[in-house]
Length: 324
Image (cartoon, rainbow, N blue to C red; front, side):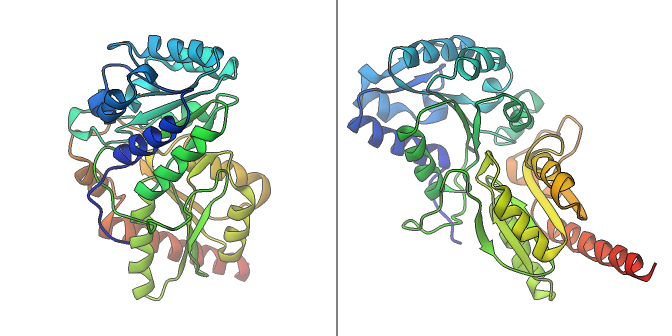
């Protein structure tokens, strides 16, 4: 892993522009968010494939659905907080129910807009879109994975939701590494004591926690689940069966996101000790994204300690169960 000076939203628009130059049916629709999404170069280069609707996210989804009905491949782009709340009905009915080729790209997801408070946090979006039929859900971990996921979406039809952050992100994958295959989880580390399953920008913190735990003699498997729907059940079950202890972590509410998806899978196939790490059931305080990750225990020593304590607790429970 290494640092990078680029954000996932920049990687998205670069990949989208590349694809759109090769395919005139690819359109970008936004709602006064060309700056937030970094669509400036797209607008300048391909003005005939760019639609600006103003501050009207519901209209943007409707326009996108109409364009899709006329044979266009549409990316509706803007802040995740608005496209997972204000326009939820339009996404459900105009896109998913109609099953048209519209991709909703939510930028500044999770707590990327942390300092603006709960009105601008999007910590329920995965739960929402998981419950809507026909919606695929993608959370890239870094710039490389974002570019590859964008290329996949540009060449594959149907509704989807992709959530991206706002700030530059550490690299989880090398620039030439195959980091994204739709519906497949990536095995980043292999261990015997615990399986850590993460998505999006939380993947980097999961790997760093696993590295810290290895120093203490605790070896963790780490899975990057960039596609949350459909979930790679086979890879997840294979990993958790080998460790017997599961931790999920995500930039999302502890309800209904990646943790909920994995819990639903395990309770029906392989019930095991499991802990869901995410944001609690409260309106999250205002603060910069790194501050909120640290405050809520999603990074650094707090995260490592939480995972270590859970592994040791699960081990004691297993010992008592065997003794009984």
